[in-house]
Image (cartoon, rainbow over all chains, first blue to last red; front, side, top):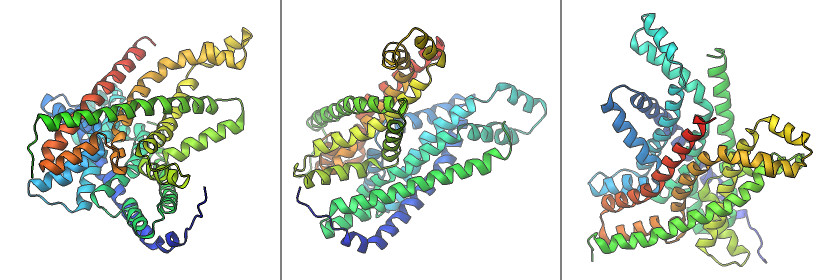
Length: 223
Length: 216
């Protein structure tokens, strides 16, 4: 191997990489927030007594979880365009990531709801709590608390998976990296640096999730 | 000229799917071997071994698979090993799968009750004998459902190989879409083809889980 590594052109491109990283983080956080909302709603639908609520949620979750994200992304971006609905690549990426995150979040939250003791629900009903209050304080929040670690690792996978949206020309971290390596012909150096940036984002996210868990779920004691 | 999506195109996709399945099996076998070594290292009575394996797992679980793929793909060229997409994907998926298998199997090994260790120690078994005859056989049952479940991720993730130009199912899908210009139909069919492989695996993993929990 007679190759000299040259990182100079990569350091020169750092400002652009930083912009890409910013888009990666923003896309991921937005998709996580929307995905969690979808997850809570669909988990309630999947644990509902009404079959017409259970079925669509089940079909959604199973079809997303058992097909590649890449194909889902192409269906949204190229498929909708062929129907005359031209989405901006960033919007298509956000829709795809949110739908994808939502399916996994649904399964995780559902496991949390299933783990709640039936006695708690009966007690809440017996005490005459209004239904929205029961859903919020007896079902959703205890369920989220129980499964928060699993949700956190799923959220991390959403961020890592966001690299794939570079295929529909979104200029997030991987997209920018690709542009730079076609300019400076130093792909290996570019991707080494970018992998370092991804690691930094990943470990920062881990710290944030741990802080959220401590702040939000531990101050109230064990349920 | 624009073609219709007919049986010829479908057979073309089916032929490309063989690569997807082959890659999945290959990554499962290679990742499984490395993953087993990692899992054993994670519970070894030697501290540096444990740290090394833990570091490896942390590193590869926090790196996007696509980055791994690019690094291997462009890294091979630096070592004058050419630019084989197939070899790159195999190496990258092996690193990725081994990190997850290592973690899954470590959990399975550690879930074998401590009394089993003590009992086999009392019988005079050495560490390796304890592992081989007592602990590993019991942890296999615990490990099977999540292992089958992870295979779904593996099959889906082979689709990233299309990005570095390997002609598997996702790559063939783009090709067929380019000549038919029917993205919804083509990607819908291809999605269904992935589903046909992944969903049975997922159901199998659920059934194994139920079976295991029932006779616990």
